[in-house]
Amino acid sequence: MPAIDSSLLNKVFNATATQVGSSEATNFHTAMLGLADEYSKVMGGGVASDTGRQQALDILKDSYSKGQLSGAVDVMRRDIAARKQALVGNNRYLLRQYGSTAGAAAGAPPANLLKEGVNTTFKNEQVWTLRNGQQVQVN
Image 1 (cartoon, rainbow, N blue to C red):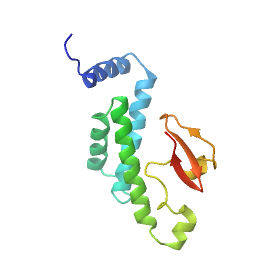
Image 2 (cartoon, rainbow, N blue to C red):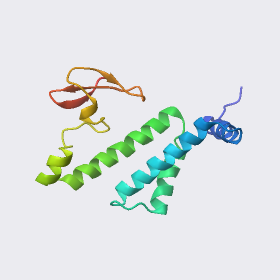
Image 3 (cartoon, rainbow, N blue to C red):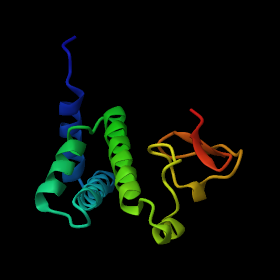
Image 4 (cartoon, helix red, strand yellow):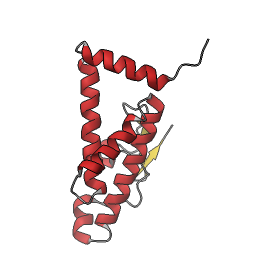
């Protein structure tokens, strides 16, 4: 059996789904556009540019398989967390409003979604908990 490029199959199935009116495909693409726009704003200092948005979309489109997309989104999440930490810095007013991100694990969900000692499973199948007030990935 010949090797089949899964990204090519994804393109074919996505195009077919979009043409026959699949709301799942269009909802997914809309969510990716929103993520790309937000990523562009964060990395652009609060202002999204067409170039930044397109670069983020290109990264996401190249990563449409489940594992690859998850990895690309995790990198974007870490970039956003690092940008937030850089913006908040040691400003006591911003720290009071947004809290410290220095102790948070990269890609961790917000602490307010977690409870101390309780495992919480998210849609991406990651399991997180709070230990001593810090986000910890269980799996």
